[in-house]
Image (cartoon, rainbow, N blue to C red; front, side, top):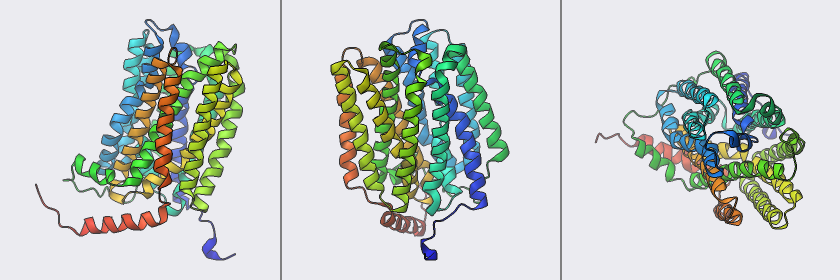
Length: 418
């Protein structure tokens, strides 16, 4: 076997970066995922709760997360990633403390909005891009995705028990404690990039945004993030209630979630390997969209026939499709932009993803009782457009050369003052 074909391995600094950021994401995302499978059930006990308001509370976190991803991402390009991560985690902790004391659905909505102001996702993935080489970046993102997947599995496996034992308010206290651990890890273990932020100080928000928006690949990736976010929040708003309506106890939901998570984890690993080693990002994306579409079809059959089996099938197909995109979309963002706009580009992607969360949960809360098939139609239209856009998506090797040429050209143009 030739040396040139040898699979790249992580350096020691890259390993330290991956381990520390994976730990941070594990503790933070465990707290977020912990309420995902039980929130729509437990929130029914809050004063003034209705399905629509529960949907708004469920998705409110995604709205402020989405709106602040761009400012936080660009801010991290200017002042540094770690500072932004520390501020975001502090805001997230404050929101969880308020949620722990909320006694009405309206205060819960306020708390969830405040939770969302800790918009650090774009900054974390930009930081992993700062501290890893291009050829191992998909694997680094897959490692972060694996920590999120483990947190997801652990949270879903334990959420029914914690929901019965601690209740909604006690779970938010647990989330706050997990976030404090993440804050400690950022301070003590996360390395800082050697170079300072290279964004010119006179670059405006709109100038940075235009640079990112002008890349067609980034528009496709961001739309994919929206579709996945909307599917995730709507699916896990609906499925827990449907399962309980069909006779499942809340403490028994892990029996469905655990094998679902295992199937999703295997799919994520295979998708990451196929995309990176054979450079088949486009083909992997198309396959993932097909899985998401099969999930919608299964959910529609389940609603029409009133059979629980089809909803379980829909859950499995959705989660497998969702996990196809977990490692590759963030990697494609960093491959499809230049060094001086990584934070802004990740901000665009996470903006779309979290706005999708808000849209999916809010629309599901409004439509699932009387207009279930309208909800499925809206989700299907989003997936069809994503599929159409992905058909012409370029696998990234040639795209990287084009972007490097653009960056060199911008750096050779003298700066002018307005």
